[in-house]
Image (cartoon, rainbow, N blue to C red; front, side, top):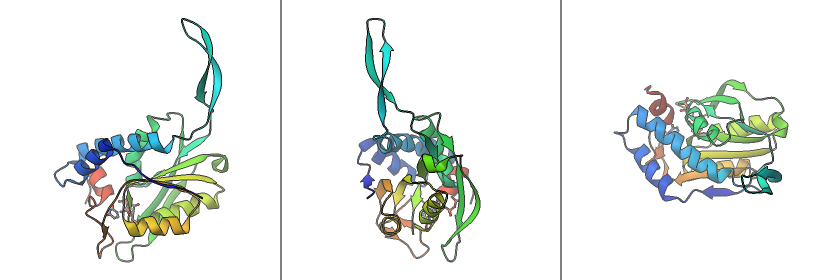
Length: 209
Ligand code: PRP
Ligand code: URA
C-alpha cells in the first residue's frame, strides 16, 4: 500500500501562499515552485537507501552512510511539472529525467497525450512524478498508468496543491503509489479548477495565457 503525506511545514505553507497570490509574477512564481519542490523532495526522498562506506576524515577513518546508488528517474508531467524538476535535481543531480506530455481538454477535462519519453530501464528505477496541480486527477492517473505500462513499479507522485476529488481519484486508481501533497484545497469549481488554488500553473510558470 502507498502512503499519502501532506507536507506540514511552515516554509512550504508560506511559499504556497505566495504562489497563490495573483500579484506574484512569472519570475517569482518559478523560483517559488522550485523552492517548494526542493523542500517537498527532501521529504519524498527520506526513505532512499544508504550503505556504509569507508570515509577518511583528517582525523580518522570510519564507516559512514552514503546513498546506495538507487536508480532514480524524475518524470515531470508537462508542461507545469517542468517547473519542479530543477528543485528536485538540486537534491539528486545524477537522476535521469523523463517527460510525460499530457494536456487537459478544456471542455471535457480529459487528459490527452502528446509526447512521452522515459529513461532506459525505467522498470528498475524509482520514478518521481511531479506536477504542481492535482485537480480531477485525470492527468496524474494517466501518467501513472503510462509509467506502469512501461514496467515501472516504484512511483512517488508529488503535487503542490491537490483538490480533495483528485486526491481520492488518484488513491483509488493507484493505491500502491506514494503521494506527497503541499496542501489540500477546498474543492473544484465548475471548470475543474482548484479553489482557491493558484490558477493555471503552466500559464503562470511560462507566462502564457
Ligand atoms: C494542469 C496541471 C496538471 C493538470 C491537472 O496541466 O499541470 O497536469 O492540469 O488537472 P487534472 O488533475 O484535472 O488532470 P494542463 O493540462 O493545464 O497543461 P499545462 O501544464 O501544459 O498547462
Ligand atoms: N490545472 C491547473 O493548472 N490549475 C487548476 O486549478 C486545475 C488544473
